[in-house]
Amino acid sequence: MKKIEYFKTTFQKNEKEDKLILKKIEEYTDFGELKKAEYFDNYGKVVQTNFIDYNKNQKFIKSVSISKSDNSKIIQTAEYDSIKKTSEITAFVNDSVNYKMITYFEDNDYPIKQISIKKRKDTTEINYEYDFDHNGKIKLAVQKEKGNEKPMTTNLYKYENNNLIETSLKTEWVEMISETEWKEKRISKRTSYTILEDLKKKINNITEFDKLYNTINSKEFEDSKLNRELNFEYEFDGNGNWIKKKVSMKEHFINSNEFIPIYVETRKISYWK
Picture 1 (tube, one colour):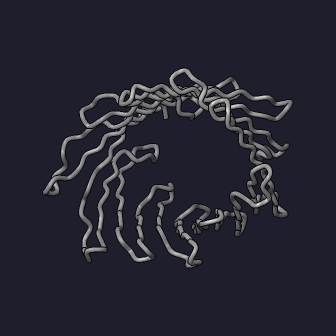
Picture 2 (cartoon, one colour):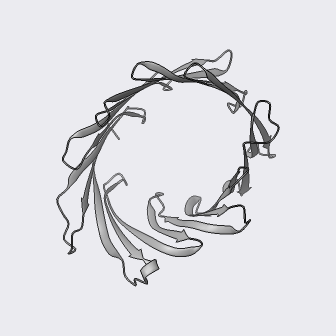
């Protein structure tokens, strides 16, 4: 894809679509990475523009984000050292250095240490520990702040037939779990849970996907009770990318028994030749 224009319209009191409103324009490089994004308000005025640059190896080297709403400019730059196996990200807010992050990598490209410096004063060092299965897939990742043996986060990964079927992110206060179902070598369903201090596993969301990984149904839960449900219908172009998405909602918390159309998104897509 070379360029995508996103439009959105809502439904009023009847099921007739309101006029289309331009919400975003994305432009891509010929190697598939985003190079520019413009965001618009409901009146068609640009509220934010992002520019992204890459080096000859197609790695990110710079981004500029300009916000019209608060007249701010954020610049991020990246430098890489293949010998030292490091990357250095520096962020400037309105031309002043806001933070710097230096990441050190293992031979397998996993980060092993990350040093963050905020406003030239506060420095934080995070160290990473890993465990891998017999296929070389990561099954455990632990983040620890220097000087503290207690993990900041612990990530667990489970696989079946070489497919990732469960992830867990655990902190001192919460554990977030994601379970993934596969069908014909594609992700078909994902379910997320949260475990808080009461140690009860509560379901948050169930999302189902079509064979192109487009969301077709999403169920939102409150305290493990079904609250809202969204249904997605698509129209596709000849390349298999959606160009129209109709979203309907059923509000289970008020015992609704039908889906009500709420908005439509359309995309105008141009391709590299």
